[in-house]
Amino acid sequence: QVQVVESGGGLVQAGGSLRLSCSASGTLVGAKTMGWYRQAPGKQRELIASVTNNDITNYADFVEGRFTISRLYAKNTLYLEMSSLKPEDTGAYYCRAHFMLGPSGDYWGQGTQVTVSS
Image (cartoon, rainbow, N blue to C red):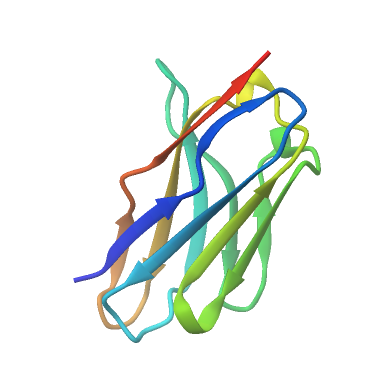
């Protein structure tokens, strides 16, 4: 059974930085795609950024160059470096791992809270 665990959230002032980490364990198969999503109170979950197993990245427009997604393929580990954070970046941040082989399907973590104060 694949388990996805996020870490690194916290409280930061506007303009500050945070680094989120995610690990998908329980399988030796590499995920096809891994990504970060977020959900603000009263809003739908939205994609922040994703990266495939051949290094194709995709960012949401609101990132505006402030975030960088990176991945360690050998360990199904994912990172999100966030800088120039804004109060509107506040929300629960989730990691998703998509597998095409082995334990095929989508696996989500429980989320880590990011709060940006003004």
